[in-house]
Structure formats: structure tokens, C-alpha cells
Image (cartoon, rainbow, N blue to C red; front, side, top):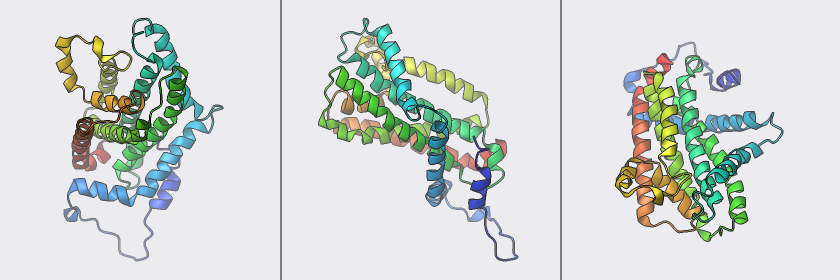
Length: 290
């Protein structure tokens, strides 16, 4: 992933010295690491934009269907699962739209966190050649995921029209759950990456955890089929409030309450805060361990 355009990135980022003195780096003058990472992200925002653009172009430029693949993938999954589970969950109104709204949300989280982990854990060769804030690659992976998620809304709206699920004005709130989902995915990705640098097996364990996480989340089945004695366990599924908020505004057509917004916001903010703090404090070690 990092072998592409390394020379062009280096040429833009390499310092142009006009004096004979060599630059001196004094780590003691660094501020709070969490804020330093944020400052550097703002400083390298043009690089982040170029990385997102590169990822989108590289993914689709050799594809005959282009960006349509982003729409076809969740559609294909929806068709298969609708055929398999439609009789079992026929009471769910507009079941194909219910499935698809969950699938595109989960696909975004799955792909974004996996891309962040891959870029940070296996990008050591590039990180050691030139200084770039590592968080820039994590944020660019999140940005690419957001673009794909917005593209996935097109087939979702089409399916809603086909199965006669009304598109209501509450859809204007959809950027809010997407923002919360993005912050949650970034926090999880940074946290897992920080651990995986020291324990590489965590990467494979995370993929297994994702599969389990998918099936214990009401994505392809309604929450009402879960036995009452197991419902308290859902409080520990931090992805669920974000999924519910997304479905609320686009599938159910409801305006979220303050409680719904606050619950999703706290999960996203706390997860991002923990992930960012751990990553910022381990970023120097990450460069030398990758």
C-alpha cells in the first residue's frame, strides 16, 4: 500500500534546507502528545486529502464498473440474506431495506478499522524513510470509508423505494450517525493498531472478533428475537447504539431524541479519546517496531 507514490510524497514533504546547519530535533520541547498529534494532523491536512483521493482512484480506476462496486457489494449480500432469512423474519417491514441499512453500516466499520490497522501495522518501511504523522494515514483510511459509505446510500434509498419503505425528512440527520460511526471506527482502529504493534497476533484475533461481533449485533435479525435474559448483555455492544441511530433516521424515519444522540455521542467520543490517547503516547515506538 505504501510503495505507491512514495517518491512523490517524499518530494513534497522533504525539508528544503537553505542553511549549512543541520536541523536539530529536541524531544524535550514537545508538548502534550495528544495535542501534538492533533496539531500535526491539521498541518498535514493536504496530505490526508491526497491520500484519500489516491485510495479512491487506485481502487476504481482499473475496474470496469468503477464506483458501482461499492454499491453492488452490499446489494449482493442483501439479496443473499433476504433469500435465506426472509421467511424467518418476514414480520420485519421492508426486510431488504432493514438488512441493507445494517450491512452498509457494518461494512464501513469493518473495512475502515481493518484499513487503519493494516496501514499502521504494516507500513513501517515507509514510516522509517520520512517523517509523516502516523495518524494522517488512519484519518485518510477513515475518509475513504466515509466516501464509500455515502456512495452506499444510493442503493439503500433505491431498495427502500422498491420495498415501499418511505423516505422521510429525518434523512437530513444522516450525517450525524455517520460522523459518530467514523469517530468510533477511528478510535477502535487506533487502539487495536497500538496493541498490534507489540502483539501482531492481535490483528488475526481482531478479524475473528469482528466475525463474532457481526453475529451478536442485530444486523440481519430484529432485536426483538433476542431472549429477555440476554438483553442486558447488549449494553456492552457499543456498536449497537450507533447502528440504531443510523437506522432510526434513514430506515425508521424518526427524528432522534436527545437521549439517542447523547448515548451515541458518548460512545464515539470516549472510544476516540481512548484510542487517540493510547496511539499518541505509543506513536514514537510504533515507527521503530513496524
